[in-house]
Image: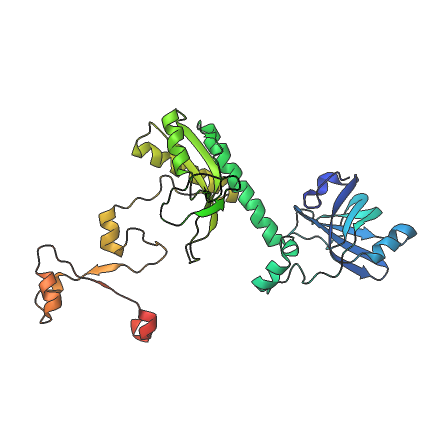
Amino acid sequence: MRTHYCGTLNTDQLDQTVSICGWAHRRRDHGGVIFIDLRDREGLAQVVCNPDQVEMFKVAESVRNEFVLRITGLVRRRPEGASNSNLISGEIEILCQEIEVLNASITPPFQLDDENLSENVRLTHRVIDLRRPQMQKNMMLRYKVAMAFRRFLDSRGFIDIETPMLTKSTPEGARDYLVPSRVHPGEFFALPQSPQLFKQLLMVAGFDRYYQITKCFRDEDLRADRQPEFTQVDIETSFLNETQITALTEELIRTVFKEALDVDLPNPFPRMAYSEAMARFGSDKPDMRVTLELTEVTDAMKDVAFKVFAGVANSATGRIAAMRVPNGAAFTRGEIE
């Protein structure tokens, strides 16, 4: 039905007749000439409908936002000054020769370029929400990340093995989701919290390098860092030491960021010893974006009258550290805490 995606058209297709399919992102009537921005997963293409083709123009007049269309036309360069540098197809437009309405649409509940949508509205009309460019971009990014993981691990000798979703309950850090058995009343399957049991079995069986991008399930209350269902990249390997495993995973992360986002991460990653992290930040997982560090004040506290500080400062293993907050006097008690 189509020869090209809308968002991939450019000057390479000048003077070619192409067919594209997609959704009418917007329709503009400029005094007898109708412009339709047709959208698909790759982006937008501008279509020009002239009134000299009566039947085609009549159909174009009936088009509204989110109509699904098939359009055939001639690719030509946009008039001087009308280019859009934000689009891959921004230098060209399609002179419409044929237009077919594949599916009409009622007025959508919101405009796809509306930036002030509540989550409730988005989820109520999820199919429309997923048409939004940002959501399409997110889905494409997820796909690119998954493919980058697979290409890297495949090239390092890892094989993708699928493990069961219905399994024996093996309680770990959270409750299992249980699935009742129809043929064994009173018995239950469990959805896996992770493929832990199976990856151990696979290692012992001799599959020394295996991975999967898999769903994990945990029946627990929602919190900031908890989800009942999530996806993880599960990697298991035998006959590698700690240094080799660290080097492998660092290279994996660098490769994924480069391929998916064109971001160059440092090689090697910055390293910090546990003792240094605790001394500077008081945490074994410091957020390096936060510039506040602990300042050593043990020596200054050895002779103070406040015994709570002095006792610790004079202890052989005692330590007192303070956090200096710039402009701290301007903070309220709640902000400081």
